[in-house]
Length: 327
Ligand SMILES: Nc1ncnc2c1ncn2[C@@H]1O[C@H](COP(=O)(O)OP(=O)(O)OP(=O)(O)O)[C@@H](O)[C@H]1O
Ligand SMILES: [Mg+2]
Image: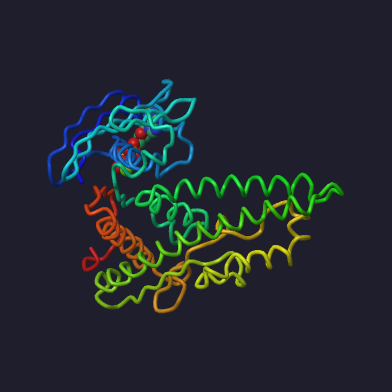
């Protein structure tokens, strides 16, 4: 898959940019603060509709302007098509082949991109939310239906939380209604977990080999997808719904007191181990950086396996922390 051209309008420090890209490698050279990362960010945005640097879309709009526009022409083996994403105070408007896409999930993944950025180290070192975002973004890119399932999950989670918060401490609490809500929630949680565990398994299989290669057979990488509670065994997906039901039953008072859903994929995490030791705590900066590289390289292979083509690669200053061998 190739990106043939990119057009930016009022995007960060770009008032107007039209760039034709050649086949093969493009290198951006410039002093600090010239807009190299901004350009890569815009291409990433065209793929997954989110920035890798911020959750606030409004930051992408050039100061003093009221919208930002990113357009690109994508070339696959058999097709060539334009993509367009406009951001304004009203939200995002996505077009595939000049046609408005009512759901962003039908736009995401029309351009497959793997970005290597300095911020990626946070996948290892940062808070669990960043690891969930990593899984969701990358999984969504290869499986757009996953994003719809995830959206449904978050809607049910919100509904369940709202009920716990509003009625948890009230005598009006309707056990039957809450049970139905919980069942729907659990059903959707199991679906999301199913997608995520499969993705992590595939990713781990490939990343393990790559890590070995990059470290000269030194690092043994294992990755695990961790449930929000030890009683939830993700290996036994067919018994998971029951395990959730039992866990919620045993913790109903706590959930009522706290007014939130305590267990589910919104609280899951991802762990990385080098030779059995948590890399988050014991890995060196270079080893952690190598894990990120292995993950990304594994994703490239995964997209190739799933979609039949290689994604567009974006590299932003990523080799600087690796020793000569790992580079
Ligand atoms: N919304 C915005 N409107 C206008 N300019 C912006 C906006 N957001 C960021 N910028 C400008 O973009 C510049 C940063 O660009 P970018 O991060 O792409 O630099 P870079 O070329 O990657 O630099 P470095 O080599 O330091 O990584 C900032 O200096 C900032 O002034
Ligand atoms: Mg930069």
